[in-house]
Length: 108
Image (cartoon, rainbow, N blue to C red; front, side, top):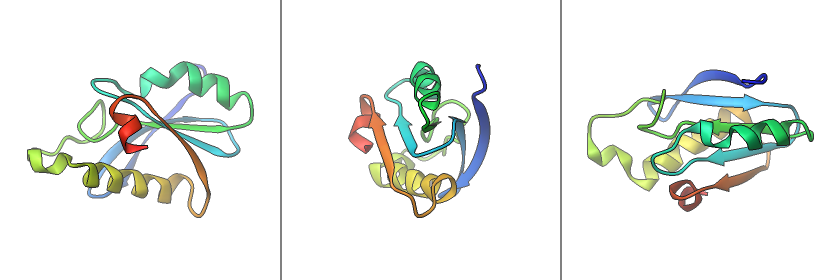
């Protein structure tokens, strides 16, 4: 979709699917329930054209990101651990903007 790149990043013991586009300061988009990175597709395209690097993962248990079997693997601490690991890969030592919707807003 219009140059959005996809990759799998190993973070916090899981494989996380990430959609990203652009160069510049990072904006991390966090979807809600029961959504995916795709919820942010219009914002990814628009903001990447304005000089930002838009990054939108599928959160733990959603889309192409691993879904651990145990219900105890879905606490906010696990999800935040995933996001810290993701930021260590995509934006090490950088400040980022974080945008969330629904459950993603809680994590933001």
